[in-house]
Length: 370
Image (cartoon, rainbow, N blue to C red; front, side):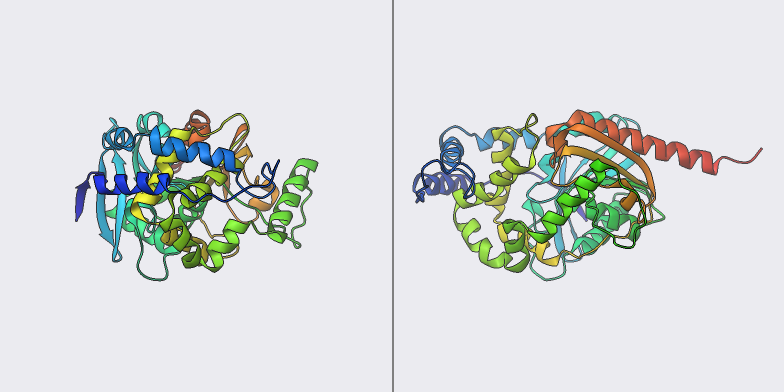
């Protein structure tokens, strides 16, 4: 059963948030700390004060409710999604999947341009936001992909494409393996490529530098990732109890992962943080790192890759094409990890190009022989 859903945060939750923000117990910071010890205190105070006194959740809630929201139960888990139909009845459907610490909000600015040519299904990952929390083990990217296949079946889509970044990229590729007869292609804007000692490939200086960055990350795992992978419940206590803790945990990712000329505005950051806060999904969303599988995700579907200059890592094509059927590859000199928020025009255009190419290729392949 699929039911309409409307966002309605109780006023008591808003009052509690403002009270907690007003009573924040702040740590000190050494002089001239900058970012040497973590997220800077002055910047966090600024964001927290605006969250308490200037930010209007009800305004954003009203705007979000202009979208068609739904929820359903799949594999024992509540799943929330936005479903926007194109004016073209026979349009291809795309399922767009966010990552961490994102949400369905990532795709707000690409809905209008993409819905001109595609039906859009934009779910919240189980354990995140209005699809959370989860209550049992096992919600890894493969189980989520199976849930997405069931969701698309329920919506009546026989053939569709998948797109995502961060965890959304892995889920989208896993969906290509779960439903290979239905997925016409997968487009990702995040595709880490690990060193491969057996690969006999020649790399350009730029590709070698990208691979060196991956090696550095593998040798020095980011603290947030290590904590969420090892003890998501432990960090979840702090983040679920303190709105400033939740704010710092997520705002630091936006601070570090966006391009220098494409920042995400404070209103969007606070709305994203608020989704985690009001749904108490800090721990359950972190468990996806705990469940994360190692190694390349199998994907038999044709793959489109968009590489953004300021992402955490940039893909190395000669290594990527050893594992995947690379049908489309684009490189951009702007944008970072949150491409749909930072450069929605670039991402939407690339997604559109890739999937229209896939439709054209399918049409050519199935055209009767004269």
